[in-house]
Image (tube, rainbow, N blue to C red; front, side, top):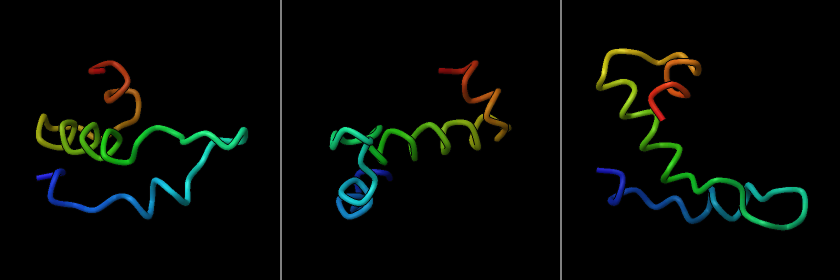
Length: 50
């Protein structure tokens, strides 16, 4: 599902302070979707699951 979404613009806009990319938006989207499908959405739950 995430592979069908074009995140290239978001990846380009969100760069780290040193000019490097932050975490890929596809990865973050996958983590959020994984958490929603498992029944939770708090950031602490996502951190524990990863």
